[in-house]
Image (cartoon, rainbow, N blue to C red; front, side):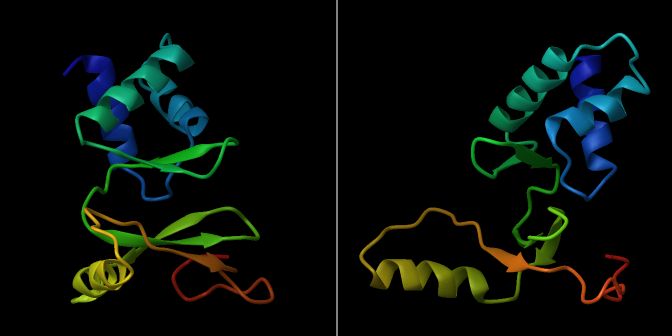
Length: 130
């Protein structure tokens, strides 16, 4: 684990807002001012390959990253673009895999995402989201 890679992982682990690579770059630059975007991007790729971070790909436009690699799901706000964690509900993993099996597939893992607005009328949703 190089120092640069460790800082990328530490910075990503310190947030839960699923930042884009350019946002992670800005976070890391505060600690390593001479680091390049390419270095941060390559380290994200390596950390992903090592299973230490997860890339959430949202098409060709951008990906978001997270250090929380435990089982959980996501809510994506279609208004502001933020991604929020939703804890896994007990039994959901088995239920989702069973649905796939009944459809004739052999799932190894899955990613469940909900889409909608994270607030109504600009008011907070009670979890600090606007």
